Image (cartoon, rainbow, N blue to C red; front, side):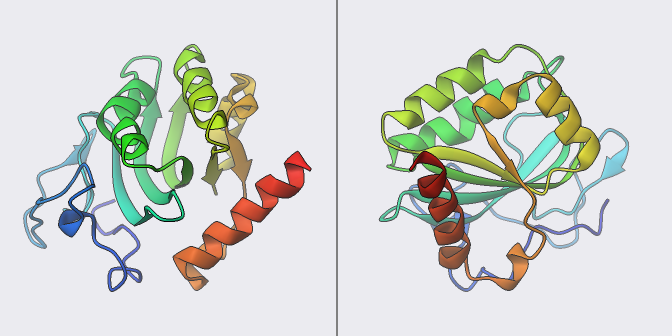
Length: 187
């Protein structure tokens, strides 16, 4: 796991540590000190800690004019024990929402497991975004995690999509494809 880096091909367009509106503004990163771990496995130092013990993230791109953010996750998404959705909401998405972000693309290729609890945080997030015509889309969640996500019926609030070629696109193009998908679904 230590060699899985957050996607870096958009760093010339956006860096979370230089964005004054980002929850990670001012962070400094090491390329050599591995201090964060998911269980006993160290992860690359470029991942951001948001007070979850098992889940880490990186804001890959934020566009405040078009009201969207692209976030990449790594680790275990555990709502049952760690209440990761509450932590994600309080420490990251609520802050971004206050800055005008209401369309969330979450890349979950590196989410190893998902353990659900109740759906109240998802329902609340969905209702908050619905007022702004926003949405939440999770891309490329592994099959076993998708199964657990659907079993908990969380897909009522969050769209699960498989889009393996997202890395070949610019962030604005990826956003427009997903936004158009949501607009067509609502039409």
